Figure 1 (cartoon, rainbow, N blue to C red):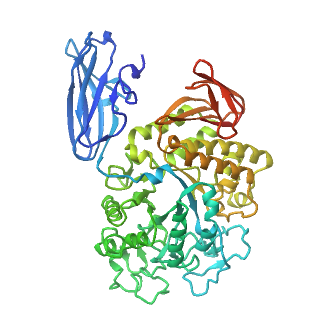
Figure 2 (cartoon, one colour):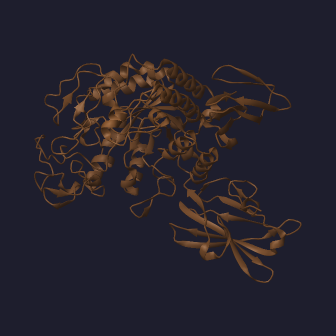
Length: 621
């Protein structure tokens, strides 16, 4: 007998309700051991990690035969992480425990996780239901050729929009990221109708504040738009024009570090006001931690140009969060609707919680997203268990586990592994957080999805990767896989997020090759139309926006998801194999229609028989 016959936390016959639990509610556990085990009593063993206490809850015998054990856990009134297993007692008085590893001694017990979250907080539904489009501002669209004179940093501007970004180190071995293409806010405004054709509802912008580098993660002035991008008025205009088209704007908050050439650190003396690197009595000196002033200091991952800030300093907190015209408040007032927190692992929990509190005061329906690369419900960072999703911090997280699991499956893995990874997240995350994840296939921090899906033998050296382009055969395979991946992305709970240019077939390995300019006029129109179709489906079908999820099939190359909301059902059937796949699925009604092609399938005896062609997707309605 498998463990599921004793206890399965994902089956309502054993645990109810499913997944995480809100504070001060109840969770019912039912155990179904075999009669031959001769158990006479059982108990739930529960360790509350944050409260640092242990609970033992009796599970009395129930049922006609007395071989079921059932009891209720009163969920703690404060958010926590609970780790639980079970103890059985036999008629002879001997005991044995039961956990994820089956029957065992208590010392070897592997426990399940129960996330306890504050259910009083409200998560804005607009983000997870809609489509997000991520823009690296320097590379999306430029409205004019910029003049870098007088701007912070020594900037080179490419006249040719289709140039490759520079990637070789300078003579001193440093990679400065000082080559710009001049993408700007007016350029984005000019393409809002294009984004609307993709059914975009959230525009996520990588950093837009004044900075010395093209990526702008080395903030120089939090209260100024980088002049190469435009002005604060341009930003207000972008937000207003986006709102007319049903879109909101998410900003990137880089609050763990600044640039060394910022007005706060001012190592190069660009700004007139004294920075921390110029004087120990600078207003900004308490923001930084010097080991030897002014040349040795804490910096992000040892990168000298990114001095780390002390987020506990009260003057820094007032400037970023709590002040009357703080950075967080100011840009919400200018029209932003959301913040994405860069390197959330390196921000203190109370710092994140304070940002959320202030955002709720300033704009109650604003959304807070965190950059976390793993399961955020149980993440340990710097030896500390994090509390991102327990109700007072982020509303949602970037869903890199989705991307990794999807890539593994698309490149020959088992759909059962994808299902297991995603069901673990669904089990561990509060429901609102699971449905508010930012799901993506690629970002500015990962190679282009098309390249990953097609490259058979990637070059090992950077020059080789810079020159690499998919062969016609590789690109054909990659495009077929990408269409599968996109159908999965738009069918999954959470916001389907498109990294600019993925929808038209851009290629490239790691930074900076994944940050090329959008190929205006050279788009893969067929792929673009496919993404536009998926966007319309997501926009028009409540079941895809917020419906529950069931896996009708997850084995080998085959993956079938069902989403339901009220009377509406959408089934996405995917075949990642180069061979056909035959499936039989339950179906209410006499006809099923593929929303991607309008092909229709007849149903007999409430069963739908399908033969999925190789590397194909159906979205059945």
